[in-house]
Amino acid sequence: MPRWNTIDRPVSEQYAYWREVVCAAFTPLRPAARGSRDAWSQRGLDGRVDTHPFGSSNGAEIQTCEQVIHHGPDEVRRVTEEVVFVNLMLNGRCVVTQGDRRSMSGPGTFSIVDATRPFDLDYLDPWRAISFRVPTAQVPGRLGEDMTARAYSSGSGLGAVVADTMRAAWAQAPALSGPEADAAGAAVASLTAALSRTCPADAPGMEAGGAHALRRSIEHHLERHVRYADTSPSAIARHFAISVRKLHQLYEDAPLTYGQTVMRIRVHGCAEALLTTRGRPTLTHLAAEWGFSDLSHLNRAFRHHLGESPREHLARHA
Picture (tube, rainbow, N blue to C red):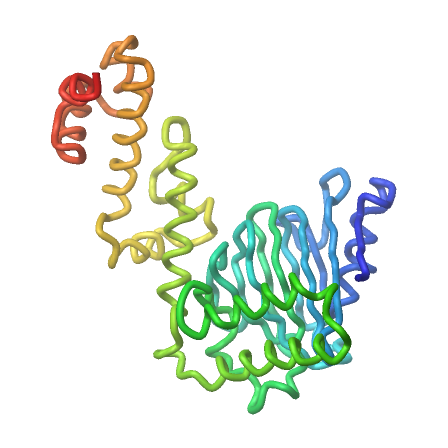
């Protein structure tokens, strides 16, 4: 199984190797540091790619650092093979943009981009993904513009079948004979074609799956940083590369609004700290540490989300 690993190169050569050798092996791509067009200001670039042929398709597992991968008009002009990429996220988050569409793909989702048109992949975190390169000739009628740059859920329906097939084919790749690998690649291509024939309004888990995955990422971030970070809508929207309007839209069909979600996470974190310390810090101290304006605010929030005051909560778990 071919492997590229930047760690085998001197630090000063890692970015050039990643850009000119590794990325170019898939389709013309232009990786860059987030926030810049071409520059790479970081010291070195940690990345590895394993690949395996699946007939006329190709599979890869990619693990590397946060970055933006551009496939602009210049790269499109240099395309020698018309392909689509089906990218299944295992770790990290990616803002996928193609045409007028932009979506967030994270663990539990996959997305599709068409190499015959410009696209951008903005990876917000260190990330790992399984990617299949599928010739467009194997996708009858080609993918419509409404099928690319969407976050498909890998948890249910046809999306789950696609993701499970990609994972299984990749996991078994070393043990597959040539004809078996060809069949696995044909299966991924066939399922991609099936997605292309699905009406976007009915495609299982498409928008809902992406919204759920993004909400989960936001709430995971809040759980880790709610005590010290700016949790205002503008700050969180900026961190996740979405608009404030989009942030609030994500919570329109959720049980709680964004603001209520922040408060719930704040209350549960404070309640856990209260039990862990057995009330040794004063409630006033805990209120300040967990972002409540005063003791009265802390008491109201506890009663709203837990149905009891902090003292009652502590006594009940004594």
